[in-house]
Image (cartoon, rainbow, N blue to C red):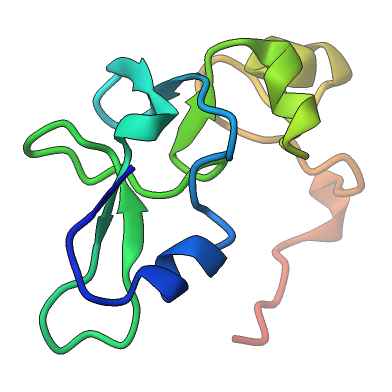
Amino acid sequence: MIMQDSDPEQAREDCFGPPVEPCRVECIHCGQEYSSAEMVWIKEPGADMGFWCCPVDGCDGKGFGFDIFPVDAELCGEHGIHVTYDDQEDEEGYGDETGEFEDRDASPEDGPIDNPF
């Protein structure tokens, strides 16, 4: 683990920090695999907080369990990460390959939905 600021206590307390026991991870932004021990703590100058980041140059992936996940699916459960795959959602009727989602309670007779926002 690499820390690039002078606040290592904040880095250790961050809930998206790498696990104590390093594991093989993949970043969903760049698709690269590496050891979780290679994640980098970055705190921008003047910022109140920092982030555990993907170590790949130019990648903006941040956080173990947010953008960076264990490659081994069994390790996800051990770290409290619950993964749902798109094909499972399709089988249940919540989405399709176009990314469109059905409103299971709506019907054409209902007319348009008023948005209060």
